[in-house]
Image (cartoon, rainbow, N blue to C red; front, side, top):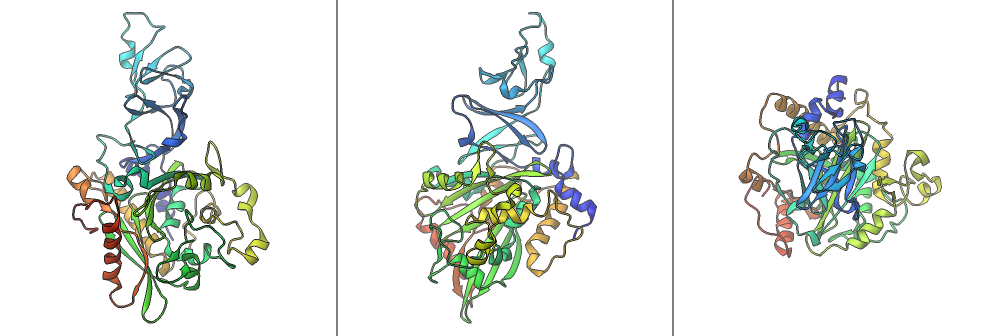
Length: 442
């Protein structure tokens, strides 16, 4: 359990909060490239409790305050002109740096516009996601993580709205033991394999992952600190000679990296809209084959409503709960999409989980390790110290690689070496993987 003051510290992310300051020091997903309108690429967004407007420029993206400094009019309706946004009310024109560059109604000799500047943040596009830096000073360089260096044709990006605090979503992703129950099928898993997590057979077993983890529900959990955050091992003893090894990762401060079948992996960020709602953003990448983006997009759009990417199964309809399905097919009774299962788990806790009354066990090692890391990092940030996974220059950024995320079986003896050998084999066989600089993750 947490003290109330620590729970507040880890869940409040608005402007001026300790957590908000820390998370703004990292690049954060702001929007999908695919969700930006093609005829007029302008969109109102909300990040960390701040209302902003994102728009396309000739050489990239601009992100500025949503409201005009003059009379507070909504700039998301503004005219896209000359690489900036012009307010509809009095014609004030703002550039991507938030500077007011024209005030048509003011006298020709007026220098009033030189005094006007609204919030503005740099943006960079990476594999289908527009990332924004909302912190002070120069943004850090991007790490050389797989999700960023994989060629675009081997990736797929998507997002989803969850109506709860960001930390609940993140903690679900670094909790290896829940998959044995939440994602279990009572009957036969009927899903197609492609694009469906836990639906592939674990190589060498002839068994789908959903059944394997369901049958072996008491993994040994090990957690180690690494340069990118945490590496999490879930080890299941299948026979006296064979273990199932699943390696996942926390990318500090608000993402995780999870294996997705035998050749695929995804990185997922949990990004506050405000304290009671957040988006998850995903970059899915394949080491072996180019992604079938059309199929992946269709699969995911079937379960959400646009433009908000809100799941069709949600609190208002009890996440589609069906007691007959729970008896005969899925452990949850909430459909075949395991994203909905995760969504139910974290939304059902309430908008902000009260961690003062929870009771954590040995299987929660990754959750407790992450909370300790977050609390230390908040204090370090406020003291002006060095942060985890926060490169100061390109040399440091190039050393933040991977992370390694695998799902495999291994002889019980020597599994600590075998999973790294297996991952090296996968990377050496990949048509796109390029050797990364040696680092703590190698």
